[in-house]
Image: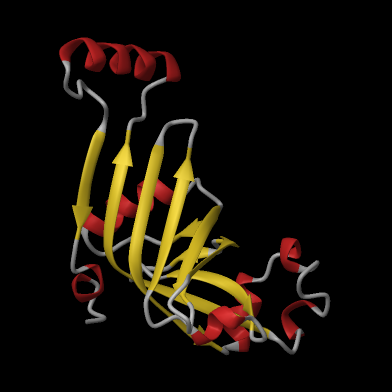
Length: 171
């Protein structure tokens, strides 16, 4: 995923956590109230913190973006990020062309001119993250130490960032 320079410390932190995680799970609330999740290939985190994806206009998700969640997971370094926000559909052909990648061709065989191709712009409102960047062996020792101590010991960093849309001037 391409990452533009971010405008706030919170967005910079989120960008650093997710920039090397190419796939996110997008969860939306369906008409019947059920949660639906699907993998999405992140294209870009723009300068205002929005995360961009290609989408098919025929997909049911385009009708259910008022409330959405993105999760990024990298099991190797144990990085987990959950972003709550909303999505918008953007039909800007020049933006589609600027983000186009040949890896999208199987889903959009006509390339950037594919008639059902649009952009999904995810705008984060809040973020929760868990980050334990040490090796698996170090994390295993910490789990054992936590069991012995009866409480979490050095299990990494956990936190939240709120008001992300307002901080980036999209409130």
